Amino acid sequence: MKLSMLLPPKYDARKWTLAKQIGVDYAITKAIPSLSGKPAPYDFKALKSIQEEFDDAGLQLYGLEGDQFDMSAIKLGLPGRDEWIEKYQTMIRNMGRLGIPLLCYNFMASIGWFRTRVNVPERGGALCSEFDFKKVQDELVDEHLQITEDKLWDNLFYFLDAVLPIAEEEGVQMALHPDDPPVSPLKGVGRILTNAAAFDRIIEKYPSSSNGITFCQATFRLMEEDLKSISARWIEDNRVFFIHLRDVEGDKYKFRETFHDNGPTPMAELLKHYYDCGFEGPLRPDHAPAMYGEIQKEFSGGISAGYEIMGKVFAIGYIKGILETYVNNKTDAIRHEIV
Picture 1 (cartoon, rainbow, N blue to C red):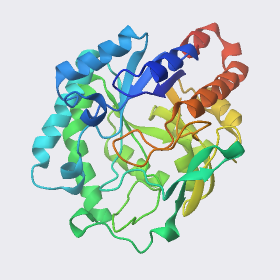
Picture 2: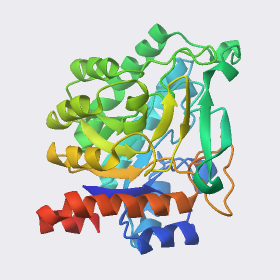
Picture 3: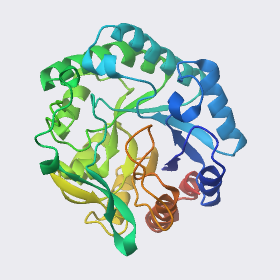
Picture 4: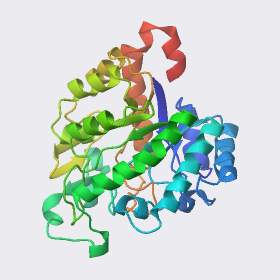
C-alpha cells in the first residue's frame, strides 16, 4: 500500500512540507490551470514542470485526480467534444511519457461532488461539510446543463471508447470515481455512478487492464453497498486502482462528514480487509474537517471544502497507526512503501 495525499499542483511550502514531515512520499494533484498557474496537463512541458517541482520537494507525483480542464463538452456531449477528447488523449500520453501511472476521474456532469453546507460543527468545533437533499430537491440547473441518465451513459461510453485504448498503450490506470452524493437526478442532472452495478457494467463492457475504480469508501457506504463484498471482488479482479478513505454519518439523502476516527465505518477493520484482499496500490485520506484556525472554502476552483491541512495531518497519523498494527508487522517490504 502506498500512502498518498492530495496536494496543490503549485508549490505550497506549508502543505508540501507537512506532507513530507508526516511521512508521505506520494503526491496526487489536480493540475487544472486555475490551481497550477500553468497550461492544462495536455501541455507536456506544463505537466513535466509540475512533476519536477514535486520531485525537488522529495515527493513522487503518482497521479492526477479530478477534471484537469473543463470537461463539460465531453460529459454533456456538446459540439467540440472530439477536440476535447483529443486533448484528454494527449494528457494520457504525457502521463505515460512521464511515468505518472494513475488518473482518477469522474463522470459527474454539470455538478461535481456537492454539499449544501460547509460549516457544520464536528468534534470540538471543527468544521465539516453536509449534504441535505431536501434543501435542493426543488432546484434545477440551467436547462442547457441538464442531462438524462441514458444520455450520460452514451457519453461515458463514447469517451471510454476513445481514451481507454490510449491509457492501455501508455500503462496509465484510469480509476473511475463514484458520484458524490450518489443521488440521481441532482438539480435536474442525471447521475449514473450511484451503485456497484454501474461499475460492474463498465468493467464488463471494457475489460481493459487500464479500466478500474477509485474505491471511495464513504460514497459506496452511502449507496448501502456491502463494502467488504464489493471491494474483495474488485480487488481480486485487479480493478481497484485507488482507495479514498473518509467517513460520513447519515444516508445518501442527508449526511455529514466526520473525522476519520469517529464515524460509523470500522476504518481499521476495512484497512486490514483491503490488505488481506491483496490491495497494493495508493490510498489517501479524503475529506477531513477544518480544524482550529482553518476556514472551509466554498466549492470553486478545485480543492475546496474538506481539503485544509490539519485534518489531513490527523488522518494520516491515524491511518499510519492502523497500517503499523495490521500491515507493517507482516513484512518489511510493505513497511518501506508506507513510511
